Amino acid sequence: MSFFKKLKETISNIVHGKNNKEVSNIEDLLIEADFGIKLAEALANKLRNSKNIEQSLKEEINNILKPLIKDIIINRECKPFVITLCGVNGCGKTTTVAKLINKFNKQELTVDVAACDTFRAAADDQLESWTSKLNANEFGSHRDTKLYKGTNKDPASVAYNAITSTNSDVLIVDTAGRLPTNTNLMNELSKIYRVLNKVDNEAPQLNVLVLDATTGQNAFNQVQEFNKVSQLNGIILAKIDGGAKGGTIVNIANTLQIPILGVGTGEGQDNFERFSIDKFLEELMRD
Image (cartoon, rainbow, N blue to C red; front, side):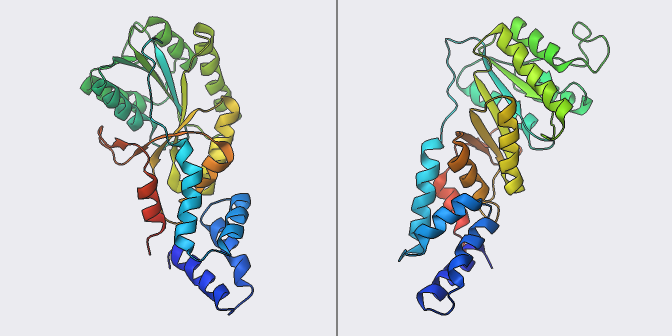
């Protein structure tokens, strides 16, 4: 049974007085759907007296999400406009780089990429393939002997080389995937931010977490931990599921107030679009 079917059944039992315990079940269902304890409690209190559960829940979610749905706007007077991408292993950062390059190409912006995942050759190969296809320059290639004297170059050095050498409008810094519980790797990420900021005290202009939204409540924890290292001012959802895990996006928006900058809808370079509340709610409310 879907989340919303369970919710409607619970409300129906309350209305018909079948089970007084059903009142507390509303909150439990919202927690199960990853809305978080505090938000689940607040929403449950509002839904208990509603005559139209679906409409009331839609309105509450819309009120939370709508102010945080933003587009990526590049300040053309700031050159380079630096965008850093961070996130856990396998969340879709490198594919997101390709989608952003494609997006900026359509805006007639030139793009360079700093390949700061220096310990995984496959990541560099993937980036090299995308940058060649999309007419972007890449800093930090393992094959570039001018930049590398062997592999495993310090990621912060790659970032420094890129920001001081680029002539492009946008510099995208692709960092290595890391678990936020790994202190050494998070310190490495912090070093990248410090180096960029020393060159340009406003860099990065956009610090984005790429998030696999299907990870449920753990997604909320990821956002919190990465936000501690360097304040995030954007989230890109590499994958979104309106089903049982969908509530985590609402919880993140409600608690941390970080803008949602877009959604990856597939593996292709064109599979990137603005977050749609209507689509999200349609999936969430699907029977």
